[in-house]
Length: 357
Ligand SMILES: NC(=O)c1ccc[n+]([C@@H]2O[C@H](COP(=O)([O-])OP(=O)(O)OC[C@H]3O[C@@H](n4cnc5c(N)ncnc54)[C@H](O)[C@@H]3O)[C@@H](O)[C@H]2O)c1
Ligand SMILES: [Zn+2]
Ligand SMILES: [Zn+2]
Image (cartoon, rainbow, N blue to C red; front, side, top):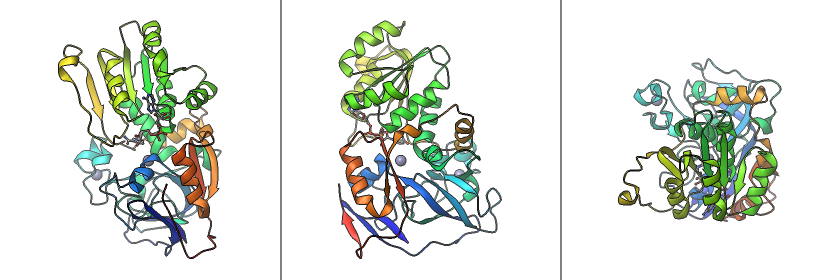
């Protein structure tokens, strides 16, 4: 099968790999029907994910059809259409029982797919702990609608959870990339009074205005006046930082009201500083980390019920054999791209293709 592989820093390969099979009793093998590229794949390419293992197939967001299951798998059967969660986890350890599946203590627990074990940008993938990692896609939900369930929609749901959003409150989302937009969509489910989104990219603000009409989308220079007009207590009640720069890290606590919750979900290339003397008396609650992706069932139900729809985020589709072009477009944020979907195929017309973007 064709697969997209992390060879070493700044080198991905489109190459051939043997089709995986069931190894452990809890495994399933899934035929991938649609996969996507995530900003974290770019972080792997650029060597900023130290845990990523050279030689693995990348990709951690996909949907597909179960092809084969191990003898212990109860939740899915061959032929089932499934969304694949970014995390593989046992569901039973100390952390899993508390919902912190990102910290599952199994050797292949947490974010392993497409990072420490072979992932999803391929024709087929082996999914360990299939009963917790795979969720059946309801009839009537197509692949495109379900594609983002396992990673960035799970992240949006987790972000809305940890940001303590209450009905009637004000929410500020910093960064209107695909992850910020998923956070907006999930925050909206909690009926806040106002959601304010900021981004430096006018195209992304336009995207928000078009697809989330109830949301106030403004460039950073208009943020102080917007916060003053819409937030009665001197700042947002909940802030979700989904951009990942020193400026946005600072904005996240500056535009929070006293005693607000600041959820930092972006990843940073460098350490950030919390200037505690400046923040003294603001009594903020900071929450950070990697998504706990254990709400895929809830997400798919919301999609099936028409309450959650982020399919406009999938702006481009490429065959897997042209993943090099797809990665380039995604990295350059060209042509209004938000998310790129990859359809597995088998033709590259060369032994292998090496690329970096
Ligand atoms: N915590 C997790 O588990 C998790 C999961 C998924 C993604 N992420 C992270 O979330 C972040 C966002 O992901 P994405 O795919 O949406 O990335 P993205 O790069 O597409 O989006 C980031 C957005 O921030 C905007 N931005 C940059 N500087 C800004 C500024 N000064 N003010 C306002 N906006 C600014 C950019 O224009 C862009 O639209 C990334 O750091 C990603 O790694 C984290
Ligand atoms: Zn991701
Ligand atoms: Zn566990």
